[in-house]
Length: 279
Image 1 (cartoon, rainbow, N blue to C red):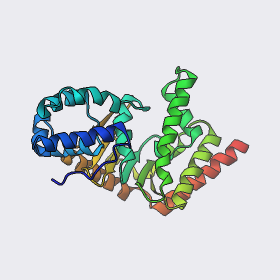
Image 2 (cartoon, one colour):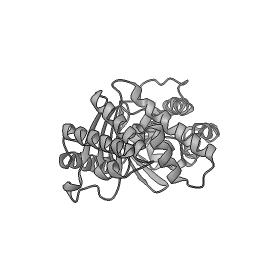
Image 3 (cartoon, rainbow, N blue to C red):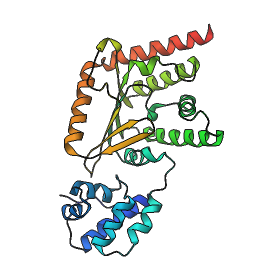
Image 4 (spheres, rainbow, N blue to C red):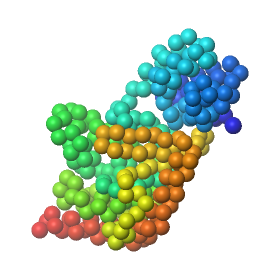
């Protein structure tokens, strides 16, 4: 298996720790597959740790220190790399998302975080934490808005989203907020930054009725899948599972409206929300 490219250690504590892991593994004369066996994981998983797309967890750190004879280096330093402004269940996925070259996502109930406006993000965040202090809500909205800056790059990552029609019709934050949110999505589509399809109610039953999904592809690490539930999430690197999720996404795109018809629906709904707010 080819090793990851050289990392910039100054980019993040996680990148630094990944670079140190690669150095220690090579010094010990172990392949990624051999070290993966010590972790009861795949060689691909070790590659993801070294590339910085996966976080070294405390239970991994202990085994790494033993296998690589690094004292307690990884146990001490994995705490620094674990610090995140995101909720625990989403932190690792957010970190992986930042390094992805392509993201494919199905959102059944709301506009995806990467496409949200501040007002829409605030409404969603307040709904998730109805009793949370205002400063916590502010921090979470700021963190979500920081994620949207991934789209400031004109080409990477590729973002292909399938939105359920329910996400467009659920009035979140009020009609003015919805009008702004959908206009923002439409602007990203018209600017060629996002591929967007709407899965209409008329499509009936479909292959992802159990929930949302996200697929992330990387230049130097295997792809990842991400599932999310109420206050929970799971990052998945099993090749068979990721392949099944990819097939699921492909079926969704086949059932969804074309990008052109999807854009027309989004813009029509944005206009309807704006007119209803003025009425």
